[in-house]
Length: 173
Image (tube, rainbow, N blue to C red; front, top):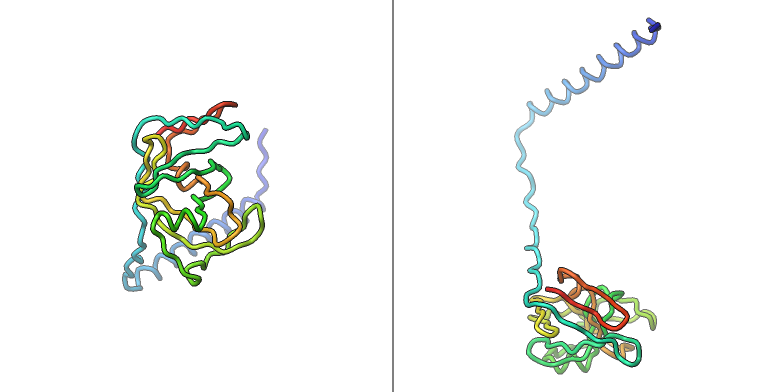
């Protein structure tokens, strides 16, 4: 047996009427206003995915994965670091790649394992590990405290797959 409380039914009817009148009022106000064009929002083009095939990076005797990369046509040895959000370059490696930086270029504050330091943003035309190439890679040049350059997620995140085994990393374009 279904029992309906008429006083509750009356409250529901009043609440529904108020809601409908409110919606109708907003629609009327909207139709009285002039049309305002939607703001134009600049959307960055999606990053191009990696090209090439499959690269293999063997685990070194020290337990780390070291990649020999070609960056803008020059060889650089990097520690593969999935915990680094970007490729991070030492000042020496950046200089070898042709980035002539001055003190005012180091306008980014970064937090590293060694603490807080400053960094400069650069863009690498290409980064390639064993033929797996990514174009337009964001990188940071760390002002001081970075002992070796890092192959971080601004490169690794553009790959379709990263597979880790105890002996090897496999990077797939």
